[in-house]
Length: 593
View 1 (cartoon, rainbow, N blue to C red):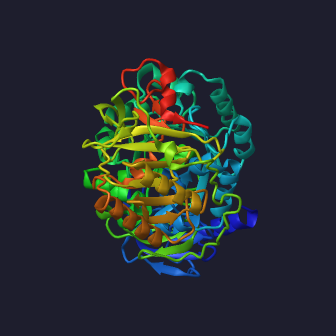
View 2 (view 1 turned 45 degrees about the vertical axis):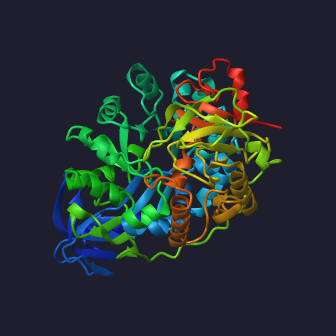
View 3 (view 1 turned 135 degrees about the vertical axis):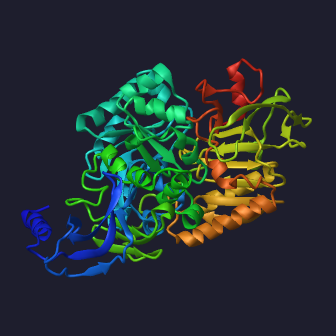
């Protein structure tokens, strides 16, 4: 900001110069005092100047709020834009009309595929859009040493990007085991952040007691993986902010709300983490978190504080989060705090949404350097055979609406060659096909509780290394679905009876597409219906989102990567056969050339 801009703002606040915009006749939400007061809001350039008084000069433009409430724009404390399947510009088009004006995005997904090329794409693709996008440099690429991602980001790579003005710090430290153990490589990353005084995001599901002390002592500022009110209180006690997450799969707002009270609500934030386009279109964004919390009894002003100034304070964004002089004019207008739906939205004083319609004209950024990214070597149907030395096996037990999985046990059927074959149980094969380095790895396991029969579902979005993940009851359809994804450069596919029933291309790193959000939502909906209606996937399970998290080896208990079945609690690969203590047998769940 130059001196003349500052002088103009002060002159508008004092009534010596006309405001660029006057939002008149509104009830201003005061997030500091948890109240509302009648006022006109004067805007000078991109910032709020003041509230005006009788006799002030007429503004260059006036908007009559007609008694509606004016609040600071909502802030998503933690989101992976890639998980919306959409480019940053298209993501902006869906969330800004919901009242969201700022997001803290962790491009962990695309960086696991493309490294710093992916980070730079997210920076450039979000530079000129209406939505204010700040990034965290991913801390765990790859997220665990037992799989193959498309890149490795160590301390030197993090140091190359951490200094950007739009980078707020280090992305979620998912390797909490390594943090608590004082792993040397993690300490190097933390020292990079320590040197520039930025924020470290947390990720510590189930961590408690002295291990939580050790995690917090590393400098972690927040956590979005709390599951219970007790965990929320434990983290606040250690000076950490806690995010109440409401994504497409993880629904934590109502679970955590009993832990929020008048003494700790200043340390509570809202986030979405991962949300699909259909959820954004149907339910909204952070406004949905607010409606859920208020509907369950949370004071509306407290909910708005959690969605605005609390996030700003957590991340050191001193220029936003409140309707107050000197703050950015990131604002939303709505009728009822008890049923919050944005009517009008301004970002930096610019009117960007009205009655659900996006008004901004964002530039298109070509995804140079991040297209495709399919390096699958010598894959064939025979690579999916799962030989078993025993009919007693471990299963990844799926839980609806959760990314936490169980470590199941079952007795299964084998053919004459000792290979697993489908029986009447709700157990199917699951495979991860490495797509980045041409290793030829195919990790194999068994998934329980998915419901699929006669077919296969595949997706190239598999947190966090984003290899191809496929589930099915026969090798032919599984191989066909995988091959379709390789052909189109990534995306989603459903196969049955030797034919691909449908697919959706994700040309940006196999994770996102530039296509409009409503088209993507409609297409995913059709593919989900195929999986439910034709393949029998349980209707309470999102066929694709559920698979996305089966390869995440940092959330308990049992997961699958391209190196095989993985026990998160033991933090090591384990064999598919149950009761086997010889870990060399684990090679039976990993097929290599």
